Length: 159
Image (cartoon, rainbow, N blue to C red; front, side, top):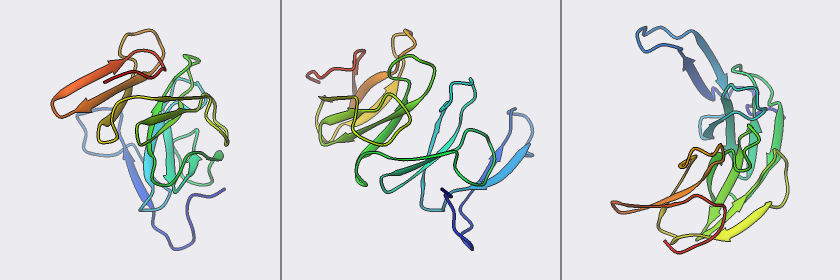
C-alpha cells in the first residue's frame, strides 16, 4: 500500500543525527498531511522508523525513506487513541489503542483483534506508554491533572 496519493504533498520529514547543525541529513516525504505520525522500531533492528495512521489503517515503513509502506495493517477504530510500545519485550514496537477506559494491546504487526484487553483509568485521563521499570517491556501510565499513575503490568487496575 502507498501512504500517499498523486498530487498530495504529504508529510515532509527533515532528519538530523546531531543537535548542532541546522541542516537536515535526510529529507523525504511519507504519508499525507493529515496522517498521524508514529515512531517505533517495527522490525527489531534497533532503528526507529516511521509509521502513519490514517483512520484505522497504519502504514509502516522500516527505513527512513519515502515511498510505499512496507506493511499496512488495520487496528482499532478511527477515534481510538493510539500509543506505541514493546509490550512483550521482543525488541519490536507494536500498537495499543484506548477506547474509553479500555486498552487494546497488539503484540505483533498484523491486522485483527488485540492480544490483550483491560480497563485502566478514566476516559478523560491522558494515556502514556514507556518502560517505566527498566524490564525491557513497555507498560502504561495515566496523567490526570498533575498526578501520574503508573501500571508496570499489562493488566487493569484502579487509577
